[in-house]
Length: 167
Image (tube, rainbow, N blue to C red; front, side, top):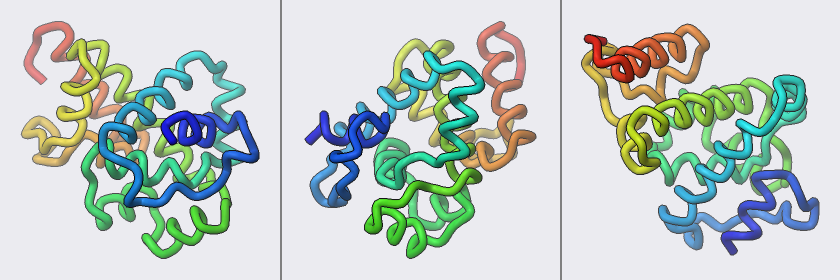
């Protein structure tokens, strides 16, 4: 199942675009799938990333992000600017996410890679992205990926941590 999920997220196999049942995807599988997705993003050109954002990411990525970052439905709705019923319908109907949600997921992947480079492990990076941060007004960094301005704040904190300065 992990391979099928990876194919769905990378868009490599149209036949693999079947829905992934929530019950069957463990947090470990989702975690690994998210980091494969994130790592794959860095190999793309900006043009390729933009094209994929416009086309939209597979809706199965919603469950992966939810589990990997331990997000509640209300946080996922705010982050992706869509109700859970809409997100679930897209997944069920094998439709891609809209460009807004896809851009936000791309932003999460990009910032997660930066956090991984600084914290040196995917687990620590994921935990940092998910935890409320005083320097960000008590907001979890992942939730600031809703906007580019929020993402800049997260980058600023990560860069301060990298250089050993105060955030």
